Amino acid sequence: MRLRTLPLSTAGVLLGILLAVADWKVNPWTAILIVLTTVCLQILSNLSNELGDVLRGTDTAQREGPQYGLNGGEMTISQMKRLIGLFVGLCIVFGTAMTWKAFGTLWDITPILVLMLGAGAIAAAMKYTLGPNPYGYRAKGDLYVFLFFGLVAVLGAYFVCTRGSGLHWKLLLPASAVGFFSVGVLNVNNIRDMKTDAATRSTVALKLGLRKARIYQTGLMVLGWGCMAAYCLLCWPSVWHWMWVITLPLYVKHLHMVWTREDRALDPALPLLVMSTFFLCLLMGVGFCVYLI
Image 1 (cartoon, rainbow, N blue to C red):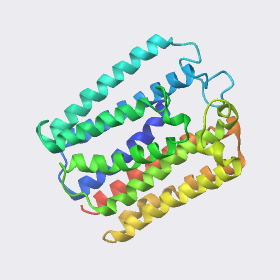
Image 2: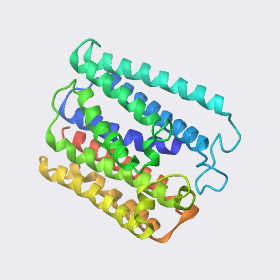
Image 3: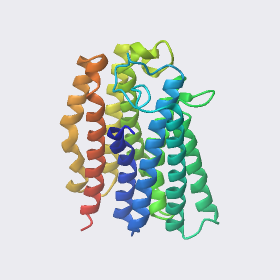
Image 4: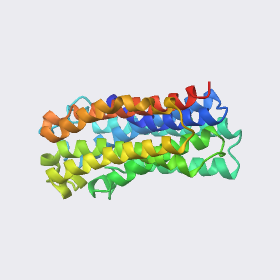
């Protein structure tokens, strides 16, 4: 299930939930169901990604990243398909329960729109490498990751927690920041796998080449930090709003690894960026909540 990716998927919704807590009275069960839905969506994406890569011959014994269930021989394709079906069901159950708990009904325009967005998230999670025309093989993964891990995660969690009220344009800044960091995780993964991906797929890293892909990675980190700083500057000033700045050394270390390592040696840069982003979002969210106490 690639559990090391889960902190990244929960980072955006956690930030959205905590920013909502700072502004509104949030039902704790709604928040829990948001996190459960997000975790199931991420696992569904991971499983679908593995199945799609194996079916297309992308994942082989020569890949630079970790070996997983299918290419390691621990699971069959039919078992993986059943597991994917299970997580589609869990996404539907938790997503429907989340919507009902937040809005008290499923038969109004707002909850219907939330359910439609959830259906789109399920489709996006599965079609990254599955289906006749997967977007992950056409260098479009960066865009979808930015949308769903950034904008949808932060703004969607805030919207559901506040029952459709209180969204304001400034929230686009932290949502975009999480999107940039999430794209960074995908880009590092693609830089690591450039040699094995070249024969089977197109990625932004392959289109750019190694040096420009590293510059792109640096730009993503700078944009993410810039958006976070801009949001804090636009909000009521408080030192608590800047707690997240203590994660800066982790991002510096990450970029140093990106510029000095290649292939399998680059793999540790992925969990480092994942956990850095998780702690950054947690600290920012907690800082906005603590400021109100």
